[in-house]
Image (cartoon, rainbow, N blue to C red; front, side):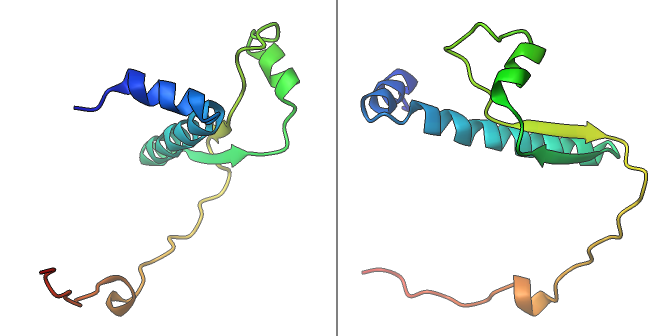
Length: 102
């Protein structure tokens, strides 16, 4: 069974806690964007923001132990983007088989 406490300690020992936290935040942001789309909303990850100002805005400006990993803008678009369509089957379905390992 997966032992999350051991995983946490391993990440800490290797100095990878922040990197892991950012990766997990990006996964969560992806699902926020998918959920927004399913509700008819538009969304976009944001870049170029001042982390200190964002921390102040959300009420954690005095917390050095917390960081802002990602921001996602969500709202109603004033335009309807065209449907991107689908790729041809030959570009997305593959029928190759691989030999069984011996």
